[in-house]
Length: 241
Image (tube, rainbow, N blue to C red; front, side, top):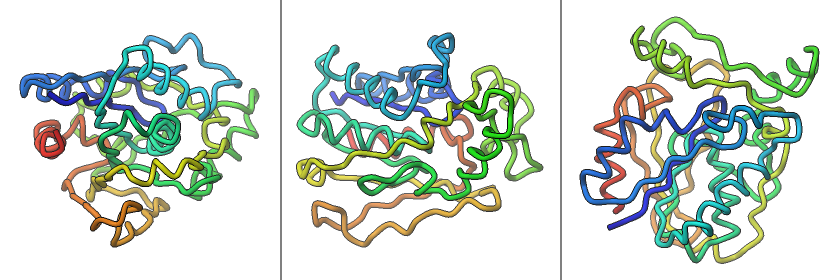
């Protein structure tokens, strides 16, 4: 039995994994899919002080409090930053890092560094009343849709779980100063359909930090593949368990 820890991206909540969790559990694995501070059941904690460090502490705290070990740590989108810094804190508890259509940072980088289009969102928030919150991205015509979701029923469901994203999450830097984090094997899963204009994915180096060949898989769907292709995503994740 493996332990999968699924970390949602910006604006989302842990509810977005609802179609994936039972598929992994039915294969005999333990699955944890929390909402980060400010989202889902923690939406009431949303505030300008919530940042990347807050979300890293969420995940590290959960791992230590539940005494999780041999964790397959999956970060979607913005959560690529979260899982990177969390693994840096507790590398001995992480068996595998999965970057699910995610930002893949270097030490000291913020979301705005990894994905420069993020700076436009920060600037837009600065011009608004509060200046600290970024509303969810708008729905675009297919195939981009709402975070890659185009089915009307799925779009309506997705809207129920979206909250504003604090600017601080996009500005705080990742900390990757523990050499042990480089020993953790990695897998990258890229969603190839409906990529919005301005989104640039960094090439994955041919070799992982631990020296083994890169492992990159693709899903022919939009960004929120846990909603649009839960079965196919689960099949890929189960290869790591």
